[in-house]
Image (cartoon, rainbow, N blue to C red; front, top):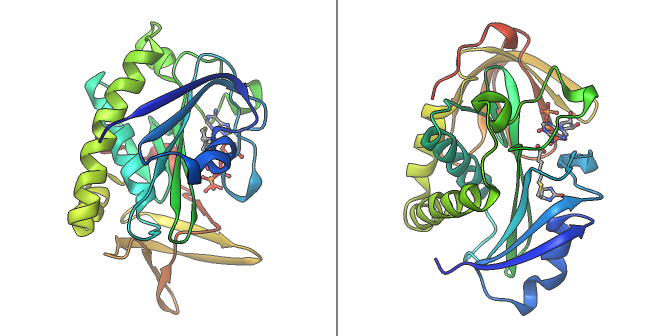
Length: 241
Ligand code: ATP
Ligand code: BTN
C-alpha cells in the first residue's frame, strides 16, 4: 500500500476530516493530527486527544464495507506494541488493552461503495486525563521513555498494510488472529446494547466477526456495532500477547 500522509496541527476529528476529503483522494491517504478538539469514540463518546498521542485516520476503498475492518486496526496496534516489547490484547471489537488498561481505540466509519475510514487513537507520549487514570495507559508510561511519533506511525502503517492485504484476500485469517489475541474468550461478560443488558460468557469470535455469548437462555450472537462490553473480572485478567 502506498501511503500519502497529510499532517495537521489541530483538527476536530481526523475521522471527520477524512470523511470530508475521502471521495477526492486515493485509497491510502492518511490524516494525522497533533491534537483533536473533538476526538470521538463510538456512540459519539469523547476520545481524549491531547498533544503527544497518535491520532490518525486511514482512508480505505475496499470492495465492500465490512465490520471486520476494525480488526485490521486492532491487529496492527498489537503488532506495533509487540515491536516495542509491550504485550497487548484485543478487547473485542475495537479496543487494545495492556495490563488491564485501554491504550488504543479504533473507530471505523464507512459509506457503502465509497470508502471506509479506519480511525486509530493510540496513547503514546500524551498525558492521560485524570478521569481516565484508572482505566487508560500509554506507551511512555509503560516504557518509561518518550517514543518519536513518526517512528510509531511508520511502523504501524507497515503492519496495517500487511493486515489489510490479508483482509482483502482471506478475511477469515484476520478473524482467526483476533480470536487468538482477544482476552475475553471464556470470561463472563455483560453486553449492553441500547436498553438491553445481557449476561453470559464470551465463547467465540465467529467468522463474520461477531461475538458468540453463551447465556442461560442459550447462545446469542452479538454483532459489532453499538454494543458496550463489560468484563466484571477484568482486574484479574492476564492478557495474551
Ligand atoms: P466500552 O465497551 O467500555 O463502552 P467502547 O470501546 O465502547 O468501550 P468508546 O465509546 O468506543 O468505548 O470509547 C470512548 C471511551 O474511551 C470514553 O468514554 C473513555 O472512557 C475512553 N477514552 C477516552 N479517551 C481515551 C484515551 N485517550 N485513552 C483511553 N481511553 C480513552
Ligand atoms: C474507541 O475506543 O471507541 C475508538 C476511539 C477512536 C479514536 C480515534 S483518534 C483518531 C480518530 N479520530 C477520532 O475522532 N476518533 C479516532
